[in-house]
Each structure stands twice: as structure tokens, then as C-alpha cells.
Image 1 (cartoon, rainbow, N blue to C red):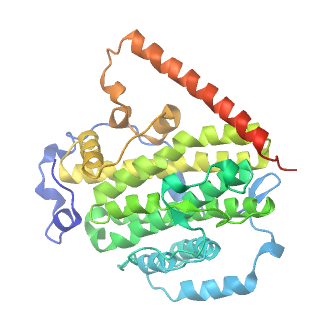
Image 2 (cartoon, helix red, strand yellow; image 1 turned 135 degrees about the horizontal axis):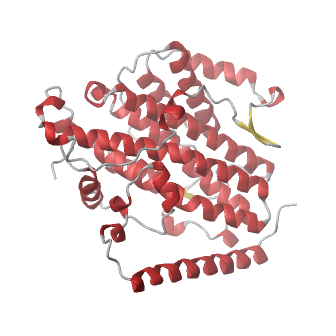
Image 3 (cartoon, rainbow, N blue to C red; image 1 turned 90 degrees about the vertical axis):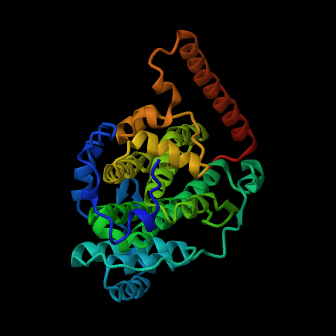
Length: 378
């Protein structure tokens, strides 16, 4: 496969027209998410507070006006979307990062700032807590000091905070190549960053309601390591982050919701369900722009996706949430080996169904065990 390195593909001499007219026909036909254009055109979402009936604007008494004024002054000093993204990436406090991310996206949309170009900080600024450890060192729920619902919510908050940085890093890092990639890519990923900042705000609010804070237990740095792998390759970035990492959120979301319902925390389960539903848009954005890049390079997205995952040593793990992935527009033959074999025998199909049953039983047993050893919320 032709390598899609930034230095090669996105050089000033690159011309999309230099590829044969057959490039589009070489790309696998896919069904894009039907809500993509509606998502792009929707007004700014100010529902950053989780009320008694779901998302709503933050109550006036909960808004730190003096702090917000300081953040607004920081945001007003930037003159482009890329500079705004670099500002978010340079912010270490998690709640400040979430708030500045929203203010940055809001200013870009209201003032119609240019995209511009900037350099991202080598790693994004990080808070003192949580302590970052290897995935194997993450404590089990019973050893974490947190009840099961707070434990799962903390893990999700960590994912959402990283997702803010992942989206803004894509905007900033590849901003010098906007003429080749198209400014729509940067608008979409800035929108993704705004969504992720809202998700983190919901998680932080709910953790506080349960008596905990983000940083109360260790977390891993796996997501950012995956991001660093693709720092010089826009196609790899699209494949690894939205099409693998965020797609895993589609797979895990329903299972997480079921565990929270089983634990008796319906409020948190509703938050998680809403976040999982909104992640469909982010995966759909990744599919759209990955196909777009492949069209410019004249290569088939399916084989390009598989080659990139192999090259960057990225593993695809099931079980897959086929309905959510289908909705987001990821063709099954990109990630599911069985989809490439339409003559799969009944024995294999039966084995898959049994595997699903075993997984559900294991989940129920695990949930029961966790519930018996942890205190439920009042």
C-alpha cells in the first residue's frame, strides 16, 4: 500500500488531480451516517449540565462567572482555530480544559475565524492527578476505593478528557495541510472536541454528586500513546482514533449501561447511554474523512485500513456492536473477518451465538460479584 505519510502525501506539491480518475471507483462503497449533515449544521450545544430530565444549560448559580471571564479573555487572544486548539492542548486543569474547549469552539463559530496554522505541544498538558500507569496496573473495582458506578464513571471521564485532546491535536497538527485535506475536516474535529468537552462535564458533575472527583484513582495513557503513533500520518490518525478507539466506545457503551442499571444507578446509566449515542457522529466523521483521504490517494479504504492497523500494530477486538457500527457507516469487512466470507457455515454461526450467550452470562456473574462486594449509592 502507498504510505500516506504527511511529509509525502501532504507536501505543497501534492495535487489530488495527479491521481487517475479511477481513484474513486477503487474506493469501497459505504453508507454514510444519515445524520452527518444535520450534526454539522446543528446550533451550538449549551446543554453542559445534567439535570433531572437530562441535558440542560448550566444553572446560573453553578456558573463560576469570574473564572469564565478569565477563560474568555484567554480565548479572545487567539486569532485562528489552530491557535484556539493549541490553547486547549496547553491547559492542564481538566475542568478548565473542558470549559476552554467549548469557549474556543464557540468563538470560532461565532466570529468565523480562519483555520490558520499552529504547532501542538509535544504532549498535551496534564493535571497532577490521576497518576498514569500501565493498563495492567489499573486497580480492580474492589481495590480502587470507589464504588462500581464511580469506578466506571471515572474510567469514562478519563476517556472523554483524552478525547478532547485527541480531537484538538488532529486540528492543530494537520492544520498546515488544510488546502489538501479540506477545511471541512478541521471543522468536524473541532465539533467533535466540543462534544467531548460536554461529555467530560457530565461525567465530572456526576462524579461530584457521588462524592468523588476525576483523579481519585489511577488511569492509563494508552489513548494518547495511540495518538502519538499517528502523529505523522493523517490516514493512520483517522484509522486509529475514530475508527478503532472511538468505535470501541460504540461496542462498550451498551454493556456499561447494563452494568450501571444492574448496580441500581439509573442516573449514571442515562448519562452513559447519551454519550454512547452521541459517539456515533464521531465515528461517522472518521469514516467520511478516511474515505476522502483514500480517494485522494487512489486506494481502497478497506485494504488501506487493514494495512495501516497492521503497520501501526493496532489490534481490533470484539465483541462488536454491529448495529451502532452500521449506523456510523463502518463497513463490516473493514473490521470483521467473518464479513469477508459470505459462505460461513452454520457451525461457525452457532459458535458465535453461543459465544454471545457465554459473554452475557459472564457479565451477569461479574456484576453480581461486584455488587455483593461494593456499596450501592444511597
